[in-house]
Length: 627
Image (cartoon, rainbow, N blue to C red; front, side, top):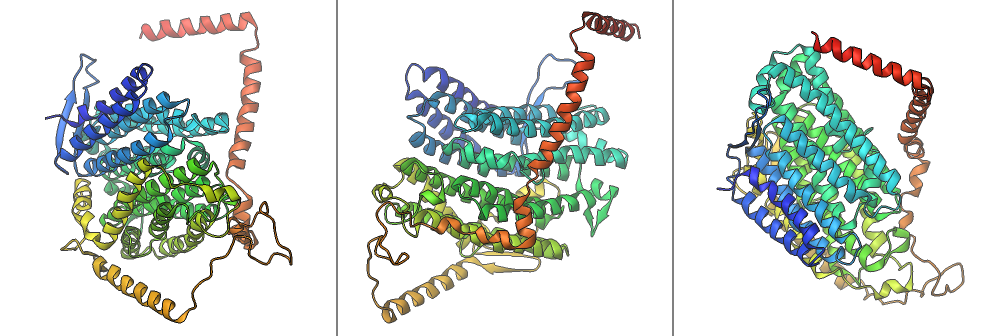
């Protein structure tokens, strides 16, 4: 049986082969990627879901390094399925959109390495394996960020500095854990952490938290995400937003729930039976969701709106899992699945729109509903899911999160989250209106074709998944329960069939909800058909416009202006006028100033000073060896 340790290698090897063989036979890139995708999907889905399995690589290394260990449990199986299905959909998107680009071979190299590194992260069972694959994920995704960026220096530098800083904060915590446990293996760590002094546990939790909050783009560590999501290769952005961000969620749950333990964190300090550090992170999550939502509303770039939307949606997950309760974690996992599906669907569709039109801004689009009807439906399904409205799966996942906050008596957090979710209706409407409704911003938009066939292969299953999980919300419950159980929590759902989703405070039947909404829709349609006159089809210039008739070059599309009025709301306007990057820039100026002074003092070109450094280094080495 091929174990997870070997599954991890398949995409990495496929990516390397695709790069080199593709120089000889260009279609080999797609062929090897497709082979890797199908093989990995088959092997991951074949592994028993939730069953604890263990595999090791042992080397002739010093005694303190006891090999690389891999394995599966409920949590890793849950995220592995998310990864491989995302890998499948994004591969089909790339087959259509990347084939004619000059970085064709390089894209498949790093895309496959990213997929393999994500599997390595979730299957790792020791800290060194986890960190190695975490770094592989960071550096391989970095090249996909700058590959097509308009400003690769700024975008790439911000991305790599924040993510490497987070990784090395995590590395510091790893060495602190190793010093106490004497091992990198997960099964030996929890007991050692339980014996640590509270102050050391808190430091370790903070360092791990920084690493994972950076990956989840939680404020104020989010500044890399808007540019990275906006400027990364279009066909990769859905994987970036929908899947890479979930590695922060996985890592947070792995370390805070099992290796450190919420019980140990409660022993340090707690608020309302929630670890204080979890309570603080929960507030960071909800603040992220509120402010990112308002920033999404005012964006003109389509991908930047989706970027801030992703930051806001992952903020919900951060808040839910930080509670440290079984229902909160279940809600976070449910929303992780829904967010992945929705963001894959929306980013894939937007990539197709950009590919067909060559335009990236709402102010340049409009009226594509007649030219791209399937893409219109895809975005419609996506925004219903984003808004958390029935009858799609986004309603179910947000319902669980709200129930978890109610059960934990965190009412202010719940109100803030509802504010964010309500405000999200504005950017959801802007997303569909700005691209598909209203007037076209230019005549050539009326000649646009539907997205390529490979993208439609991805769109249709994702739309069906949203509908199915809305109608049958209990489908995911067994898998979420296994993931939650692997973290040491009791199951939180009381659902007994696939049609219902119920927990401690209530429940609903998804099949009934979708049928009730369907009946209402039919009644409204009949009423509209019988009592309203038939609509008249108008030419795009058949309007009143300041008592004049505009010509064909006059821009008539104003839907992109939705959100401009937010600047008039005092506290919202103030938050939109300011940005946390200003603080980072001031810190950078101070660091540059200090570095300049130190350079002038220590590295001033004086040979005698350098000789002194060499002598002092030699003395230090001799003293160390003599101990």
